[in-house]
Length: 263
Image 1 (cartoon, rainbow, N blue to C red):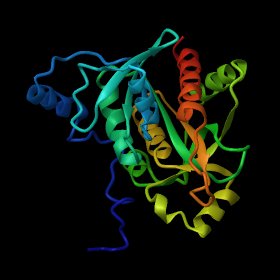
Image 2: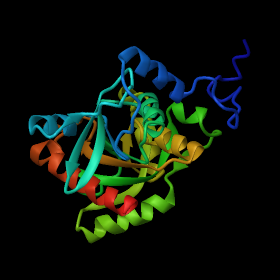
Image 3: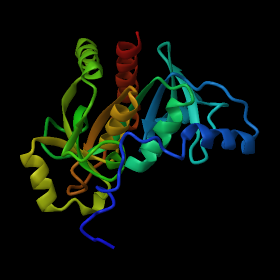
């Protein structure tokens, strides 16, 4: 084996179709689960922490999506201020997030919004606060299966601009900036954190780079937010999200963003 040819960076054909297609996986899942084909909500949310799913379930606001055939997750639907969302909780990390995203877009999704908790790198205020991620440092594996190697992958500017304008108009305090996407949260060393800070990174999370690479490669609409809630447990009382564990603020952010991007 040629150890200089790291598999993650070599042997890729980014224009070639995959042998394994999400449509085919879902076809078999529907057969095995005896599910009828149908559409999921056009606006879907990834909730890696699961806090929003738990808050909505506690308020009896969730209904299971009958046409979601994914083997690994449940999707629920809810309506907030007239906007209907599908939501998947606890899909943590780049590979899991893109696994869900691939299946969501072939099931009827047209806009995917990820809202993940994140660690603070460069402070933009007292946590908790939100960052609209406009680009992400590719320190994970999944993005390299979708796009050629590069330091970062950017969000679609056609989504960023109207989302930021609507959030500002709504009076929601949201910062815009770059994140560092890692596959290994417990390897956030001092050297790595300092390098991210020197590069102007605002937060560290686990999904954005992969989701943005998928979105660019597939031509899909994906927008990622970081909910900066912690300093990587270096202080007591870390990881607080605010009132109702951040659910009220999260719903406001998601609704304004969805309306701005879908009309």
